[in-house]
Image 1 (cartoon, rainbow, N blue to C red):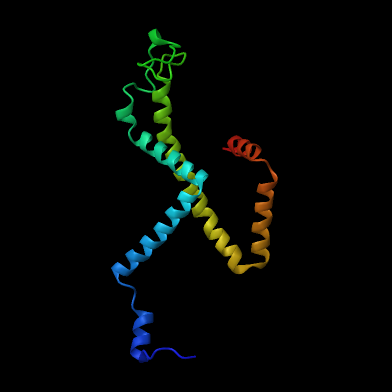
Image 2 (cartoon, one colour):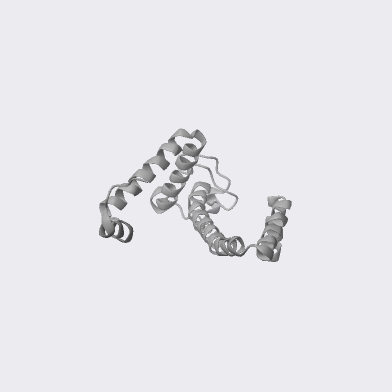
Length: 164
């Protein structure tokens, strides 16, 4: 196999020295650009990314977007139809429904991030352990996953909600 002569020092330098910051940034830009190009090709992926971005922007700007408190009741404005003052109308307690939806988006994002973080913190180490050791640990982990997949999602959610 003919390779260019780097010598011992050149090989050691190429293997042991980490890439410089501009090289690492170029790699990240290349990977990010490829990921964005794939996302742009997929219509459903692009639509989902736009919806998620919109939810994050609206939730972050909730205090600016809505002028009504989502919890404060106004009995004089009960069950009002959608109008300029109340975009989605009001509920039976006179609370602005649009304000409640926008402020609920903030909670939704926090809960989603915590759920994904909890799943990652629990699932990745267990999956790595089961995959690395194999044998009975792998079999036990797979049986647990099969048991979770056997139930419809809504029944499993109701089970966990009942236990909590």
